[in-house]
Length: 227
Image (tube, rainbow, N blue to C red; front, side, top):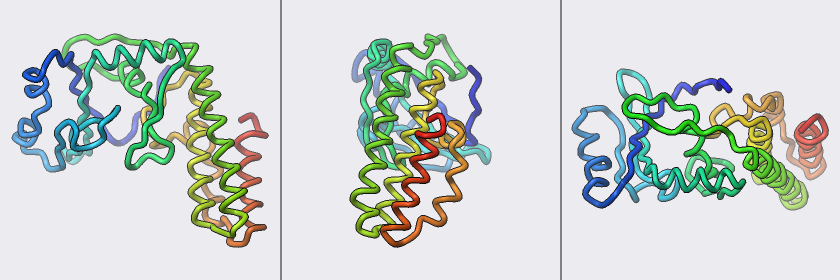
């Protein structure tokens, strides 16, 4: 299924890292720095540590480029888990809802291979069912907490944060149910057809009553209108 691309270009170095020597060859940050592109470069372990583990944020001829390192052996493990509907969600800076481990499988599915050959997995049926259910339930929990804890106290900041997370989680659930890969949270809300909620976040309210009203409006869109 065709999917829109973000304005951020992602490049991946995908290898079977058979040992430290090979790992050093393909992930040495100095090799990336010597290319002369502006940006920040990280060795494995310096950023992320799970699905994301080192890489670079670069500017190449006026375009923003992310460089990710991938171990094909690890990807195949995540693929085997995804085929059984199993995955984890890792905490990662810049992500509201976290990053699911099946992202690396989605990268293989839709990426354009520049050198060599890589598997082209589909979206496993078991993952569609399990991920859709997981993310939908996560959204319900986030909404409930936003209402019962933050809205009840008149805490607009906490309530808004909980609502934003719930919307992203619900978007994950909708896309998973359709068998569409979500590799990050950029544009995920629009892709899931939930961007009509965005203006509501400019007027959350400040009193418990107003905030509860906002939670109910968001809940209605996420779950009572085909969510």
